[in-house]
Amino acid sequence: MDISTKSLVDKGEMLPLMEAFYTVQGEGYFSGTAAYFLRIGGCDVGCHWCDVKESWNADLHPPTTIADILKGIAEYAVNTVVITGGEPLMWDMSKLTTALKNEGYKVHLETSGAYPYSGDFDWVCLSPKKMQAPLDAIKPLANELKIIVNNKHDFIWAEEQRALLDDCKLYLQAEWSKREQVIPMIIDFVKENKDWTISLQSHKYMNIP
Image (cartoon, rainbow, N blue to C red; front, top):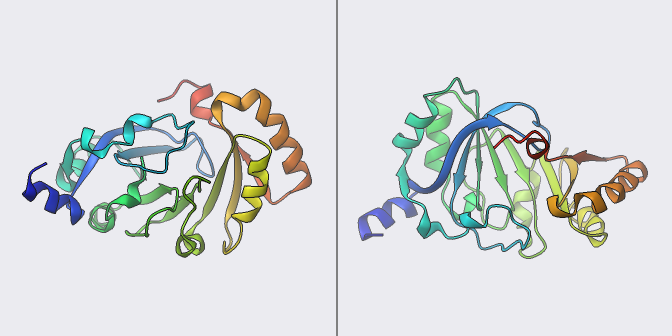
């Protein structure tokens, strides 16, 4: 990356865009609703079960201008844009979210919370990971807490992550490769802890990208 491009990326005027696509949200509160996804490259959280490990190395994904990102979205009848990753908060989201809001889109964020918050979002889905715990400052901003359950100890982690949350939806989601083992555990936990709701990766069951 040349110095000029790196400067634009550092300012959030260009972003390492891994992929952009219009689909149906498969998880959490907005599951089943249409949305345009922007997957931003770059992540060092290191979940061993991550299903988009190709997103981790930001250098593999071309720095893309906000104008070009908006052109891609304009091809579809889109109401909501979801910014995900990777870990999008590795980059300054301010200019991108301002541009999206100026076009009238509702803007959602999916983040581990491991990096400082930037941007202007209508909905924040916080999905914290044990490998790199979330910053306390982001927790009061979360509308939705989504914990991936890989084993029984993740229920303890889930309860710990509720601290500092304010009027936040609580979701437990099975790690996909262990779903047959984990989902019965989640069902039992939710029956005993009624603040929590089960989130299914419905897009995978329906073979939706």
